[in-house]
Length: 175
Image (tube, rainbow, N blue to C red; front, side, top):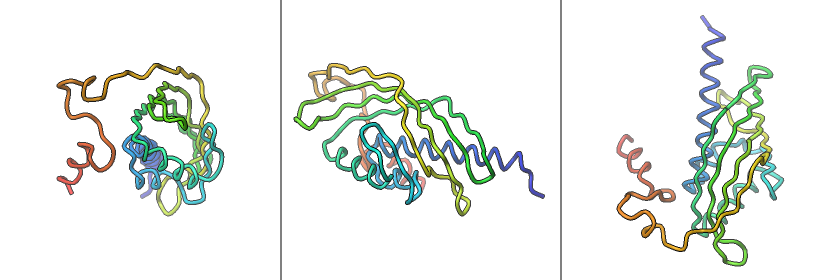
């Protein structure tokens, strides 16, 4: 017997997992997690970038090569099903980003906004089909002059990109 309420709960959790997977991908520079968050034909309007999700991923990979530090927090995930395989999802985010600009200078910014997504379920899997990032707050900050090692002091381990981050050792051990 098929319980539609149970299926809706399972679908909601799968959508949230996809949003969290995207955040891990962007924060840990994990290409596979990013790719598994979008359908291959997805679109992304992400600030200065507006085009295919593939193009956004390629842009993110280029940024990853500069050794940025990103932290994304997602809250208030509101999911509205338009049909069993389509959902409109609004997810609030706060992002802390530090990276080198085109001129080589270190920049740091705190952003807040919303991912306004159209999710589609294909072959039993939910992913982003279309994303528009809406910005509600931006605060440019002075980057700290010290290295991460100096700032964090004895607080270890420090977050790292894929595959050096602690979470990947844990996942591999569970393999």
